[in-house]
Amino acid sequence: MGKAVKEHLARALNSHLNSIHETFQVLYETPASSLEKVTWEEVVQMGEQLSKQATVAGMLWTGEAPDVNQLEENMGSYFNMLQGFLLLSHGSTVGAGPTLRSNIHASAKQVVDCSLALLKEAVSSYGSHDANQKRSIPPLAGAVWDACIALKKTPTTNYTAIGRAITQVAVSLKDVLREMKELKPGTTDPADKISDETASDPAGDPPEDDDSSEGDLGNDLSLEEMKIAQSTIDVVSNTLAVIKELIRYITGLLKQSSPNGGSHSVDSLEKLLKICQGIGIQVDELGACLYPPQEIPALKAAAGKITNEIKEMQAEVRNLKGPSEGFFQACEGLENSVRKLEAELDCSSDAADLAPQMQNLDLSV
Image (cartoon, rainbow, N blue to C red; front, side, top):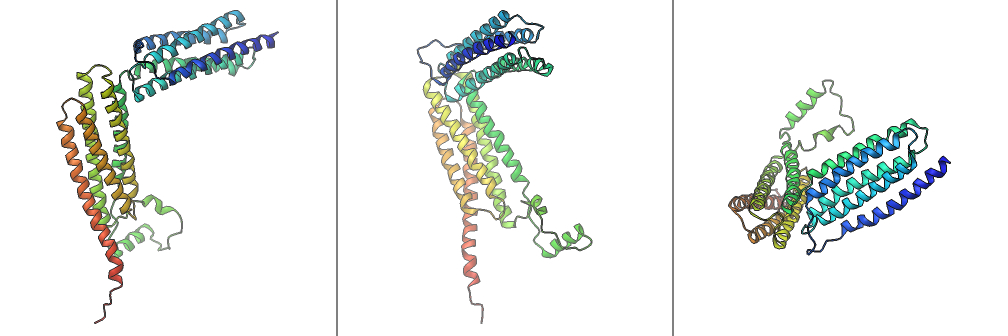
């Protein structure tokens, strides 16, 4: 009897799962602009109802001798709410750009995933004598609560969503800048190097052939390499300043514009985000190329791409309205630092090309 009931509940669960999966696909579709936009507050309120229903489900499925009709009714009610939640989430994406839609999609998916995990475990635990399986249900109900509470942190406008994404780029730039500043010059006097090795190994034993030197990576730059590193640090520091000014500029747009802005402004904001992400990739390249032996051609290429990206960024900002003096001043500072770096890289390339020629000179009198 118990086995038959569990199979019946499993069939009911699978039917609901198929329906939810079909509804979830709607989130991947862009709603027509003519549809009435659902406010995010409505989505949050439905999430609160879902979290309460998850608590009820946890109590029912872990109770002693739970009533099958109640369990099935609770399951049906839960999935009806979940379906309504998904439809509301989709309605909230009216006028949303790709970045905002992605945020809404991720938040909704988290609620759905936690809900399905709860109900699957609940059905699986029916009739089980394993106490641990029963104890796994309350934490799963708690995960639904957490996912629903997190809905309140989901960005509700294109400006906010894109601003947060650009902020993530800034955080990544800070990490790269911190690593660059840890680069150190090596000793230029061989006697000093021998003295240091002797001090670290009083017995005078030869160093073992192991990977112990890996920890010193980036601590042996020549003076010329260190000069290039410092110029690159200036470029990244000024790039970070540009991104910060851009975030400040977008914040200003949010204060003076409608919540989602027109399609033109959303398109421009999305382009600005892509440009920032492209700059982030080039900054990562700069950081990777600074370790000896420095890759001069790659450094040149990354610096050139940053220059092009900044020009595109300036063009997009000009398409938008709002005070942008600070942004353009920061761009000027970045352009100056890139030119300085490119000049030093050119000198380094010339020196590298000249070295083989000097070695071939006949110094005999």
